[in-house]
Amino acid sequence: MIIRTLSMALAAMLLATSLAAQEPASKDQPAPAKEAVPVKEKAAKEAAAKPDAAAWFEKGRDALFQGETKQAIEFFEMAIAADKNGKKTTYRLNLARAYRYDGKSEASEKLLKQILKDSPDHVEAGQLLAEIHHALHRWKEIVEVLEPLLKYRHDYSTYHMLGEATYHLDNFTKAAEYYQKAIRLNGNSALDHYQLGNIRLAKNRYARAVTSYESALRLGLESPVLHYKLASSYFNLRNYFGKVEVVTASGGKQGTISGRYYLIERVPGKKDVFRVAPSASAIYQIAKAIESSETPPIDIRMLRANTYLSARRFQRAHEFYEELAQAVVKQPKEDRALYHYYFAESALGLAKFDDYLAHLRKAIELDEPTYSSALVDAYGVVAEKYNQLGKLDKYVEFLKLAVRESPQTASLHMKLGNALEEGKAYGEAVQQWRMVLDLEPDHPQRTQLLNLIKKHVHTLAQRNADKAT
Image 1 (tube, helix red, strand yellow):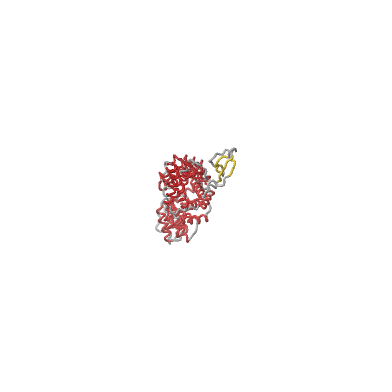
Image 2 (cartoon, rainbow, N blue to C red; image 1 turned 90 degrees about the horizontal axis):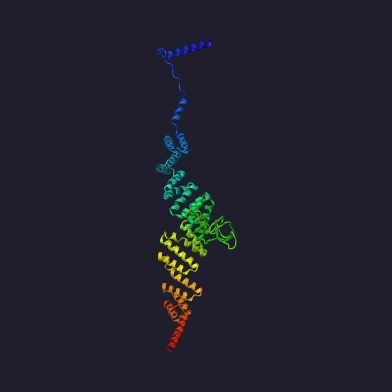
């Protein structure tokens, strides 16, 4: 009963209030005033609606690192617009960064150039601009941007990018200088060691190239090209097989890698025992390059054959050159000529003289200016080989071929004359000695030759007289 009475009273009060609100206020009684908003609260709301430059900048940074580049650009632009003094370079730098992330490289580049114009010592702006140039392979522009900044800061990023730029501009001296400084600041950059190795290899500084390439390998850089270049460095240092050892390699196979060794050949009569080359050798690095290539390039395979040839392992070298025959057909003429020249050398090492001369003639056919002069020497070499074998007729035959190729070489006529004398062909011998004196009237052995000529002329005359009687 009490609750019901209270409810009815409350309802009556609400109804009266509602009706009073609907009645117009009398002229003599003023309308009730609206509740006033505190001044501080109003200012806070306005500040929230229109943040200052610093607030816009923070919003931009948050958006940028959340990957919202378009939103970041908008916030950074508003920060710059709200910056009354217009001196906050940080705002413009981050806007340039946001432009770049959003794929607007031109806008970023324009803004960064303006920053550097206003603040020539702004290293971060210069590095960011250099990165844009790097992506577009503008090597000259990188140098123009970064070199002036070296007076303000020496850091790894600047030296690394300068090394890359000068390397691509073929300024190897400068590039080596910059890479060395980059390595001093960051010795764990495998790529810097590798590029420095490339420069040293190009300058024929093979021992230093080895040091750089080995550092790159130790730091985890791995590629067939790296192994090939390290092999080339060892090859030019004449480190073909390194210090050969004898080790046991269970299940090993000749011509393959087994741990730290290259298995050169089996030791006869001993199971799984091989003569091996260490990793610090041309042949090991070549094998490593071949092993890590799906289809080994002809350059690597050619270097393997040349390594065996240079180490005087002629049989394996000859086999490798034979394997290359089909692949070489597709190479430029100069490369084919060089191939035949080396193939000829391996044949000579095996005393296959006909093959030797055949491949040498093929090299001359492909590149006559380079190899034509080698034919005279080849005839002389083969002649000496036959002489050592005691085959005087073949010795004379190839000396005559050499004389035919180089008729004005007195030394060849001298050798031929002596060989003909040994074969008792005195008339021909005399003719060759006379040619020697015609070519070199002041020959060191002039008196000896004159005496030989007189002796054998007399012998021939006496022989003819005996025949006549």
